[in-house]
Amino acid sequence: MQVLRKDSSGRNRYLDAYWEEHKLHVEIDGAHHMEVRHWTADMLRQNEVWLEGDCVLRFPAHLIKTQPELVMERIRQTLTGR
Image 1 (cartoon, rainbow, N blue to C red):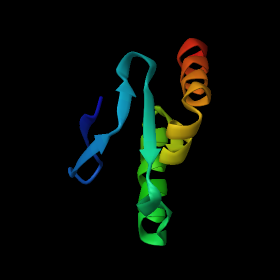
Image 2 (cartoon, one colour):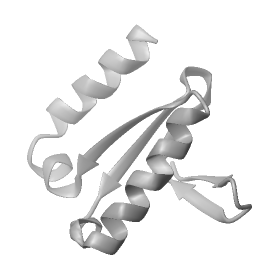
Image 3 (cartoon, rainbow, N blue to C red):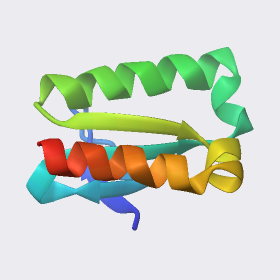
């Protein structure tokens, strides 16, 4: 479900999942996202998306594997509430 978008500087960015009609981005963060450099870049990109009016849900990859029902419930709640 990856979607290509351009950031404010014109660089290509890939969203893990995007529901355009709901303005909902879902990002799945693997272990490398915990490194300060990646974590900072993720936060800055997320702030940019929020400033444009979209919502971002972030989930660690571990949670997707161990509790997929929780992840899907949060996505459903967001889709039905927006």
